[in-house]
Length: 256
Image (cartoon, rainbow, N blue to C red; front, side, top):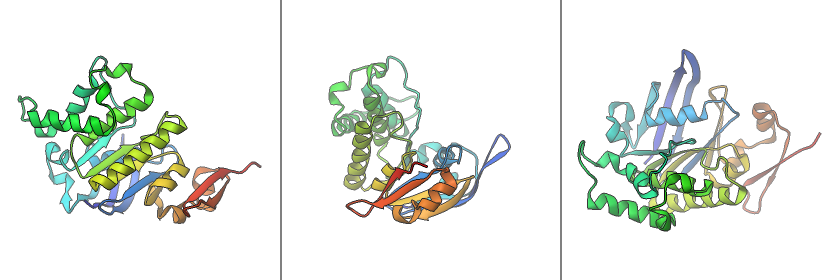
C-alpha cells in the first residue's frame, strides 16, 4: 500500500514541529527518515499513525487516515515505538496478542484465529521458545523482536518503526534490519523507519527522507541524499562518503 503525505503541519505545545512536509512511499518499498536530533522524525511517524493532531493530507492506498476510526487505522498501519511500554510480568505471548486488539470485539475475547496468528508471528521471529517468558526477563535484542512481533500481529500492509535499532549492539542492529527487510519482501510490506545510523539507513532503505528544522531538506535514493555536503550542513559532521561493493554509500568520520 502506498503512503502519501501532502503539506503536513504539526504543532506541539503551540510550537511548530513539522512544516509543509510531503513524501511518498511506494507500496512494498522501504523509506528511512533521517535527520538530526529534534528534527521531527518521530513526530512524523506519530502524525502518520494518527495519534497527533495535524494539518495536511495523509493517505494509505488512497484512504484518508483522518477520516478513519482508530480501529480502522490500526488495520492499515502498525507502529513499533522507540520506547514502548512493556508491562512488568506480562508474557511475550500476551504482549504480542495485544496486536490483535483491532480485530477483537469490545468486551470480547481473542479467538482461536487470533492466537494462531500470534503463534505464527512468534515462530517467524524465532520467539516461540520465549512465549511464556515475562517481558522484563528479556535481553535488549529480544525486546526489539517482541515489539516488532506485536506490530506484525496486526497484519497490516504498512509498518512504521521508530528507531528500531536504538540501544542495540552492532550485531543485533544488523539482525533487526535483516529481519525487517526479509519480512518486507515476503509479506510485501511498505516500511517507514526513523533511524539515527546513516550508514544503516543507506544500506537497507530504498529511499531516504532528510528532515531538518521540521522540513524536508532532501529526498531520494541513499546515494542522492547521503552527500558529504548535506551531512555537514544538517548534522554538523565531516564525513567521507564512498560507494560500497553494491554501490550504496558508506560513511566514515573524517578527523580534523
